[in-house]
Image (cartoon, rainbow, N blue to C red; front, side, top):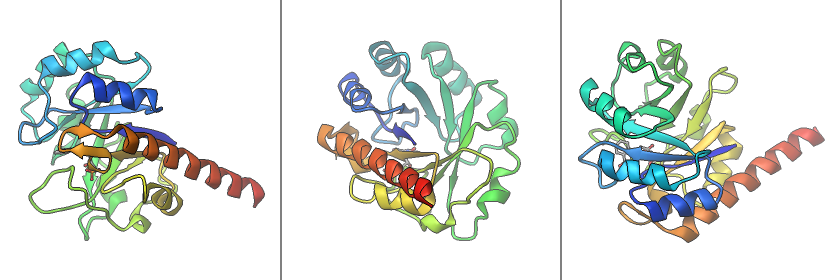
Length: 214
Ligand SMILES: O=C(O)c1ccccc1NCC(=O)[C@H](O)[C@H](O)COP(=O)(O)O
């Protein structure tokens, strides 16, 4: 079980997340978001954190020049495309990427994943019309495909109180949280970050124990 803390906007929050055991940090390059960071802020965060934390750069239907400019300035390990980007668009940067899929009621996730043959995984997020992400909404975790053969990151409205149940229900490879561990928009609450990671790790251990006993 991997844990990604998304919407990191400052060095202090990045350090708290990594010290608490986060595997990945998400940096939002989407100006309308309260979690948006400039390439300069992102580069400062990148310099401060462990080289073993996966730095993920998140974009929403960005002009390719914007993505290129960011990847020149910030040592990102992974790109996350959170809008309506096509597979062709995502692969043009020749970098590892994950594709976010918003779980609209009529969306078949397996069908939606199919064109992204080179994606390293898929982040399944809640769907709210007009809001690309960071909604704080959950979706029906039973809709997460089992045995898809692809890495699945579960997102959308997770928090320290519901992440264990979400892991038991969806059995994802990773979980992602933003608003559920915030003190205010764009700033993380260290206690919530630690509680979230602890709850996710404990739920994963319990799942493994159950499988072992069966
Ligand atoms: O976080 C944002 O503000 C955001 C804005 C636009 C597109 C995506 C955004 N966040 C992407 C993430 O990966 C979030 O962690 C994910 O949507 C879950 O957010 P939350 O429900 O607040 O945990």
